[in-house]
Length: 151
Image 1: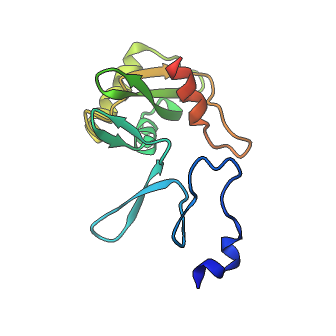
Image 2: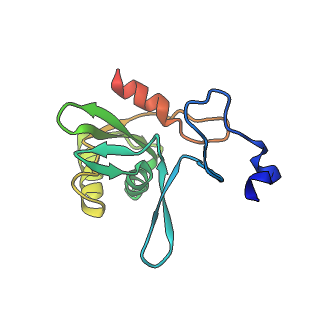
């Protein structure tokens, strides 16, 4: 039986904010899409997914598209509470050395995402920052950006 495996020694985190198991499956919190060809695409963490105007948007999709802009070094996308849409998308953008953030670059980024993804997925707000908050291993701490955006 799978549940007797040593891999099932881990019963979840101590703060127990949600049940980590469904039958014999460990729920990682990762959200993926299965395509018709059998391949999978990582959309993001279930606590990072942005629901805007009824659409589910993975922050990774927005971030990767923003990174296609020639001036962008790093990006992070979060949901910002909105009375009409539930949330809107905000991009935090670190520009490459020597480039200053302007309204023109922000609009180019928005247009790029709108063209490549969709109208509901483009960041309605772009904020240029010097750096993004990260864990010691280099992962972006979106929860900190969400708390900044909600304030």
